[in-house]
Length: 357
Image (cartoon, rainbow, N blue to C red; front, side):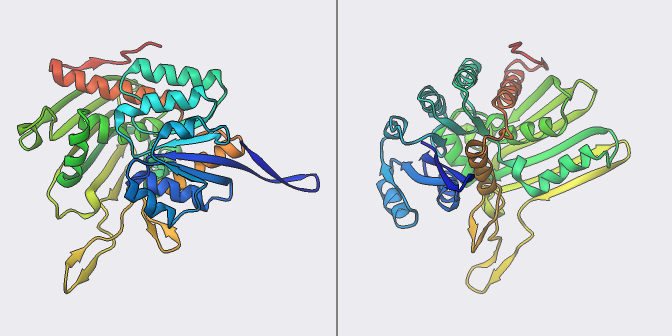
């Protein structure tokens, strides 16, 4: 339920009531962003961990905290739902219930586990005239935003090829691969597929080839350790992404990423390896305390893109602005990483798009 505050004939602010489902690492960042945003009137959370609920009760101004996500869906006071830090196979049923209940939805990636599910979510959001977006946070990473600026302003000429490396530590990899059978393409490279396709619009992917390797997690599961994805676009440009989750634990802040784009008139290199702030203490030695993924608080500000991404969605809902990440774009990314997995299975390139709708 939206609340307007008036001064004479002018609307000063249109507040919204937000429910956050899942308040773990990422969900906690989003709940904190909602708590400090003046566009939010009332904040509700759904969390299965009672210890986490009690922790957030001491930090946030909560209207209600529950362990049942359906309580938020059925609450007529709530007009906006953020689904974060929940298992990937819960994304579709939670988002569908929220959209069918007339609530705007921010959904952490992936949009769904099948193309049919993704299509249904998009159809319901359009039918009910609701804001629906997917959490591709790298679009809000300031370093990566410079990639888009470089391409838009033709600073390196026509892009010819792009190489990306995105790897996370085996500690985080064990958590991800332990809760889902989705591949590194679906869970890690998906960020870069989304970001680069967005930067390179209106170019479209026409072919994808992929290979995996595994000597660590593959001992106990079917999950590969690493995956290479090569995408050919309709203008001949190529994108090659290496993504995995077996970096040794000494790497900073779980994630180690860089991107290089070469064009006809120059090149651009982005270092997002999180090594630019180094803390060295007698007791603990060298540490890298800053993270730009996903975005922990640092005093009065935030280190990564998720806080800004959450605020953008709240603006879109309260002020009726367009969302930056359209669900149709997330559906295309999903089609692409599923094609990459199919390429691994078949051992051959896959023609895109696989899904014509």
